[in-house]
Length: 278
Ligand SMILES: [Zn+2]
Image (tube, helix red, strand yellow):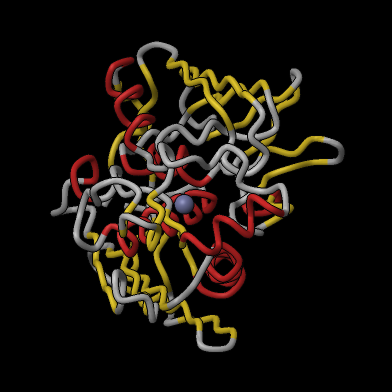
C-alpha cells in the first residue's frame, strides 16, 4: 500500500555502549528530505543503509565502506522501518550503534519524542513476483507474494526455558511499538560466558540483553513469554529495512539469523521484486 514518506521533526540523540565492542558511541538521528533514504554518517562520510553496504553478519549486521564500519545497525533500522521513517541521517560517533536495552524500544521512544512527520512524496512498496527461499543446514527463510505484509519467525532450542516458539507480526494490524519493539536480544548463560572470555559481548551486561539459563533462570523478567522469537522477528524487520522500501510480502524465517535474512533480501532484489506503481 502506498503511503507518504516520513522523517523526524527534530533530531534524536542516543548514547551508550555497543554490545559487541563495548566502546561508547553517540548516535544522532537527524531529519532528511524526501527521497533521501536512510543514511549513516561517519566522519562526515555518508553510507546508505543498503544491502550492498553490508560487510559483516557475525552476531549483528555491519555496514561499511573501505575503512569505515558500523556494527549492530539492525535494531535502530527496525525502529525506523517499524515507524515508517524513510528519510533519516544516522550520524554516528563510534564503531557501533549503542545497544541501549538490547531492543528497539529506546529508539522508538526517542523517535516518537522527536516527532514523526509526513512528507509530500509517497513511497511505493516492493512486491514479490514469485515465491523465493534461501536455506542453509536446518535454517530457512521463505518469502511469498502477499497482499498484506507479514514477518514471522520460528525457533527451536533444547533449553527448556525457550523450547519451540513462533511469532508472526503483521504491520497492518499489529502494533509495532508494543508487540515487537520491546523484545530484547537474548543469549544463553554459557554462551555469554564464552563470549566474555573471547572479549566479545563486552557491552552485553545484564541490562542490555535477556540472558537465559543463569542461576536465576532469566537475568530479568521476560517482557513477553515468547520474547526470544519476537526479537528474531525484530532482527528480520531491521535487516529487511536494507531493501530501502517497505516489503509487501510474507516472510518466514526458521532458525535463521542475519546472514540468511540478508541472503534472502539479495535474492528478492535480484530475482523477484518489482516496485508497485499505483
Ligand atoms: Zn537483534
